[in-house]
Image 1 (cartoon, rainbow, N blue to C red):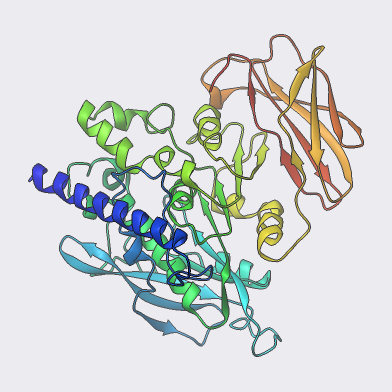
Image 2 (tube, rainbow, N blue to C red):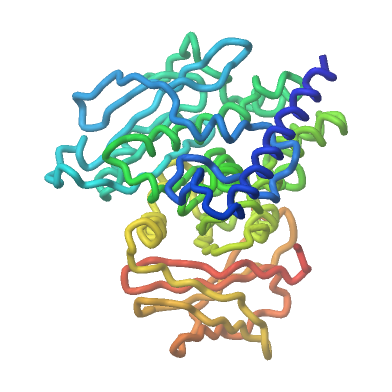
Length: 427
């Protein structure tokens, strides 16, 4: 049985590799018009691991679906997911747009779209889809626990979302495991919303909270069609430091290696081609700053940060930051960009950094901790920093400081952070 599963993973890897090779030939062949910039097809990165288990070609196609409610301001539907335990699965989702909200919009107007990925213990959140529709977006929020609108288990639902499904099923067939299904269902939701007539398929983004942030990190590396990604809390390197270390301690070495190889975001997020906005708190119980920093450093393209001292962990706190909307607007609606703090430098005991901005800045702060591990239980201090044109200059950083970062606030009240600096050289 194990041989069959390994063979299946290899076959999928070969299919992905072949697709990448064909894509490379298409891109360099003169006169070839098989793939256009507005193609529905995912363009897999050459840097994806050969063990990537998803068929990105198939997932690029919009799944079959049926509406279950088109009377409410937030509509609902079911779409066809991947096979689970040998049978087709169904996925429940909410959909909203300015049009479903009865907003006065031109009949032929096309909306940018956002895919909303809930976290552990969550479901498809109607209010989350509504929030984005009121911002002028089409939005789809799917359930990733095999449940319907009232959290009832669907007879054709996929795997549940408990830790047993996420970690304890590592010896089950790859196609029956939670991360496989959840990633596939997120990408399918993207393919589906892109197919709607009122959606501009060339302007889409993804944001996810907690386990949804974890999934967003994976999907960002897989689905090249997104123009922006915002993982909240979630990150990779869970086997090195996270709230789930006890789960890994109960695995055999081969089981742990297999889980990391297949399901840890650090295997995929380095292939992301869209700008990524990382949102987290200094003391998050699940996704600590050391694993978090190692994850965001893998992104080779544009990235920005909003790290907040003692940010609470939850769905509402995770979708509340105004900066998420500003970041998505920046890339999907030509909105005013968030400020961006370049990598801080320490000189004469002070932190210096250049800020790229399009709006006036009203304040800046230095945040630091002098404690040791555990990293998510540290006490943090905040102090005002000085703004000089495009420069932020902090007061003296205490010699005993172990981690520090800067924040700036613009006239809209939007806060962004620098990346973290670790005095102990954490990479």
